[in-house]
Image 1 (tube, rainbow, N blue to C red):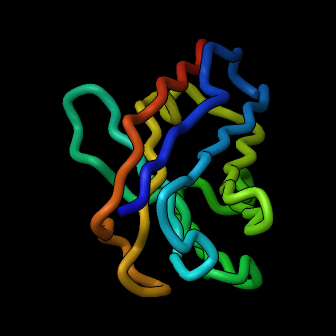
Image 2 (image 1 turned 180 degrees about the vertical axis):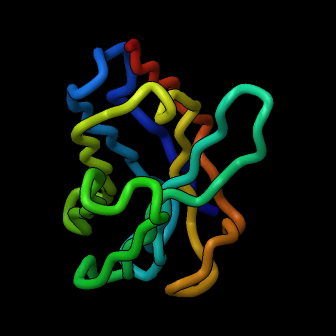
Length: 121
């Protein structure tokens, strides 16, 4: 059983940056492939980024590629999402989650509670 808690969200102007963090507890964090997802109002939850268990490989949704960077620190049981050049369409609730396989875009068994990111124009 893994518990995931996101932090770092908030309100930012378009073109700005935010860094989300997700702290994990209760499981073998370093063995999990991790991902970030988001859900905007009235839309389905969508994949944003994935990172391998070691942190050496990453992949992204086309909509964020080149602007967002996923990273992790297995010694601290954390995964982060650095978001640069933010756009109003990035406004959503962001979730960290485990992924069942590398390259997959569907979440695994464990989710955080989500954190709001709002980008003003």
